Length: 264
Image 1 (tube, rainbow, N blue to C red):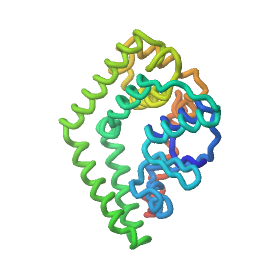
Image 2 (image 1 turned 180 degrees about the horizontal axis):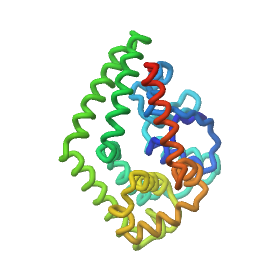
Image 3 (image 1 turned 30 degrees about the vertical axis):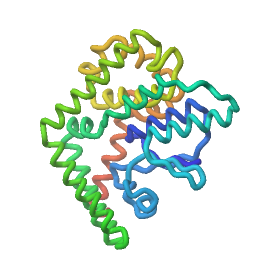
Image 4 (image 1 turned 120 degrees about the vertical axis):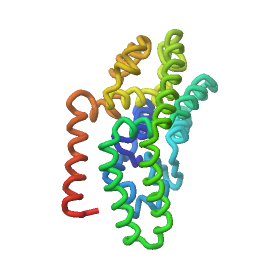
């Protein structure tokens, strides 16, 4: 089994936490979207959406995080030989968490950095069109999407909507955690694997005071799950404390050098 992912990718974090929680072995391939590695020809042929993560088990390839996590859950059940009852509460929370798209929230809180990255990615796309003419039309779609995203980042209404949707999700989670230890009950579940990376993204953007610390049950829950091995492997290894600056610096340095020498 292979997982194409990157620490920056929130959906990748969700899947990695789920894999670690289930103890499933897999081969890890880092594909950095901020440096355009997800636009490389070989990867793009396999996955024209260029989105991360991608999970491959033999000929079976899955692209959406929630679909991958549900597949992992079924695989773990098959390997264990046990058939647990269907938990509709877990499914409900997985769908609820998946409904919030973190992309615009992240980009609107990092507009200057995104403008630099976006310009680099557009140049990568143009270079890949020349490298693989048979994929030029699909690369052009991604190029158009890049321009459209830049326009959306400048729209205050889109930013406000994303913030309101996140606040509503967090309010609902706060109520739930006043009743249960974890998101779908007293046991850790795939719903938690999907939700925890959202809290980590808020921390990465230095927005804890506004979204986490003002919600005592979520804060208590967040401090609890940070001690789980799955969190340390998927998120803590890259973004706890000073480590986030090392992770961000490596990418920034790569982009600056490639831009300087026009290596796309």
